[in-house]
Length: 329
Image (cartoon, rainbow, N blue to C red; front, side, top):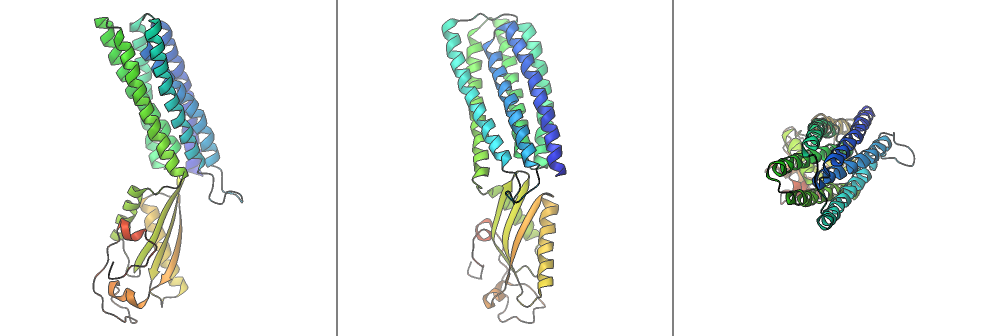
């Protein structure tokens, strides 16, 4: 809950900042009539609208779970990111349209020096704000904050490109470069909008994050306990900043319920200490079977029926399968 409130407060500041930066860029466009600056301003208005959407999604995601939402409201962040990605793509196509219109009408460019100063200020502010937003989003596992931070960073890079192009135009009088910069910027905006939309849809569809699961596998192998004979059917689902982890843990069949629960607690503590506090784990325990003896390295087992041959390393392939491992795997 504390992380949710922290995410919400930062997103509120980012949203208000986006409004201010948009106004500054519109003023710069008013002075210059530059299509490149207009393109940059349109990207900012998308960030502004996306900020309000992200703000609402974080407000919803921070709500505690209830009867109708037993897993919480974290999925709202994925919906927000999908809306933001769609808006960014729309802005990219609108810039293409404005570029074509400008080629037809041939609008003159005005005071580039004043516009350059205003746009340069927005670039610095965007970079600092985007870095803070993205880092906190990574730390709190918030897709909405990461999307907002990425928007601001993209806005910074595109603004730097606009500034560079306008400087060239200022000294060379090659005004056709303004249209070229706008066209290139539209391609960049559409591509980044697609990436954000793609990642949000992956979260909505509960697509497996293979990189995250690989990290889980490495941590589990490094902290393996004698009573953890096997782990399989591992699944990781993201609900906003919360990770839900399901798996089957095979333990010696003769230990009591309390001892098995201690093994589950140990597994949960290792995962929580390594990844994040906002983790819910649902671990199903299985009792070992005779074929498990050959892969069980427990030295003091009095119930062993077969000699130990080798320990199977958990891998991405065998840990996600719904099948108990044996010596032939």
